Amino acid sequence: MRENKMGVMPVGRLIINMSWPAIVSMMVQAMYNIVDSYFVSQISEAALAAITYIFPVQMVLISCAVGTGVGINSLISRRLGAKRFEEADLAACHGYRLSFINWAFFFLVGLFLSKPIIAVMTETEYIVNEGAKYLTIILMGSLFIFVQITTEKILQATGNMVLPMLCTITGAVTNVILDPILIFGLGPFPEMGITGAAIATIFGQLFSMVLGQFMLFKFNKLIHVKIRGWKWDKSIIKDIYAVGGPAILMQCIGSVMQFGMNMILNSFTETAVAVMGVYGRLQSFIFMPVFGLNQGVLPVLGYNYGAKNKDRFMDAYKKGFLLAFIIMSLGLIVFQLFPHQLLSAFNSQGNPEIYSIGVPAFRAISICFLPASYGIMTSAVFQASGHGFLSLWSSLIRQLVGVLPLAYILGKVIGLNAVWFSFPLAEIIGTAYLIIAFIILYKKEIKQLSQ
Image (cartoon, rainbow, N blue to C red; front, side):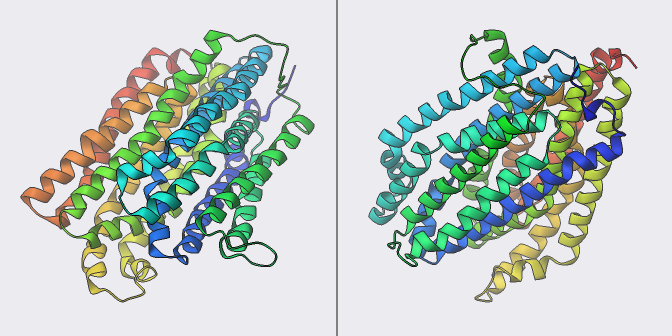
């Protein structure tokens, strides 16, 4: 019998034990994203525009990797909780092989479609050429990030959150170190510009992947991953993507919502678009800890759902939500009291319009923090119990049915300052759906779990 702390450790201590490494990983990733953009912006504004145009494509790639990983994580943790260890091993084996198949698709896209994709969005020759180079390298080298994320999710499903954290930090630190060296040509290295930024990203992912393989096959004792000697099982693939498929679509929906919101804001002024971009960067420092908490709670929920332990399942859900609510409350206080100071860090030219638009925007949008804490944790319940499509519907309702139509209507009827309230209003609508969906799931399945 393979014992696991997710079934025996006190729930409060277990959540902290499981979540803090994921929170550190997410915060490091948030810092890396800002630093990476900063180095590219030093080349030129056009260079920054080039990687901005391809960001939605990168998000699709990452969505596929993370979504598949979430499905693997959910299935493995449920099988471990049910003591069906061979099926847990097979889930990991399938996930490992799926990472190579997913990479093959993006490899072909990078090889043949990088330039046409960029050309659809802009006619500027420099941006098309340099952006295509960056995108080609990122997509063709995406094997490393697919295997890395799969490895991390397998380890997290066993209750080990520290090793995945070390992998993420290793990749981010490697990238940050190599960025200036390869972009600007420091020491013996030639100046490669945007291409250097792409190569630095790939090397960061490579180092992270290599460390992950060492940890998975050297230190992991709960899951046995075999490269060969097993056959495909359609039911396992179906179970993985029953959760992973909606997770992929959920992240893609976020990209569509952001694109639509930028179009609405641009009809008023480009400064409003800039404010939205600043908010996105800053709010990640509030949401990332909650997403890290979500990563720690998800395998605990999945394990105890598989073990049919209703008390521990509900205890993990309640404590996870309480911690998320506290984090979001602190974030709300900061955004309500210090919007001017937050904006000033991104307003080096002292543009007064940034403050006149940004201050009310920050205060309005941040109202959504509190209901969002409930949404994130309740979505974890859906994913952990194998009902990923319930989370998908929540994302659709909030971001496409809620935010975009409300933003358009409020902007037309009242004006720009009203657009920002589309976020908390949509979050309230999404919360109402989540409450109903959770009650139905609880009555049908969770309530039937043994004590």
